[in-house]
Image 1 (cartoon, rainbow, N blue to C red):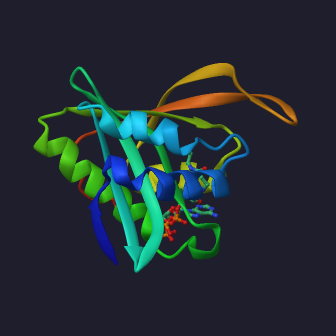
Image 2 (image 1 turned 90 degrees about the vertical axis):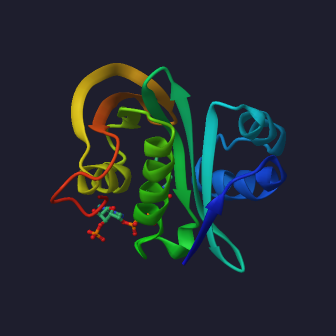
Length: 154
Ligand SMILES: CC(C)(COP(=O)(O)OP(=O)(O)OC[C@H]1O[C@@H](n2cnc3c(N)ncnc32)[C@H](O)[C@@H]1OP(=O)(O)O)[C@@H](O)C(=O)NCCC(=O)NCCS
């Protein structure tokens, strides 16, 4: 597995991966904008071609995980965990203190990833996401930045 920081020149690859994972995938210009912001940081993983990525944002002392996705054909191979681990190292490098994210209550793979990395639920945003099946709550999850003992994401 090789991991590297995401740059604005990676925007098209990130858009391809994001669109493969979400109905309302972000465009290349969307990612160019995100990746040009000093407060954003991204990690891309791949073997020749890009397989997975994560994008996070500095918000005060918080690191906010905006999105993380693995190519559908390569899931459950450890990429998501490695991407989060690398983002966490960068968050530590930036002296950030706490991770915060939102995840749809019915997104069991993502919730599994976050729990295995040591995240805990700290709140609920009712009817936060609009989906084809109606509104879905967002779970707000958090964990401290840096290694969390006893968790695979540490
Ligand atoms: C969530 C996602 C990024 C996980 O990526 P991945 O590369 O498959 O994750 P990993 O292989 O590193 O798995 C790490 C842990 O996540 C959990 N997990 C992964 N897939 C899971 C699934 N289908 N069901 C339950 N838990 C799962 C497990 O705890 C797993 O650890 P384990 O294999 O030791 O049990 C991937 O499913 C994805 O791209 N989903 C679509 C995009 C998305 O919903 N992103 C999150 C919201 S922004």
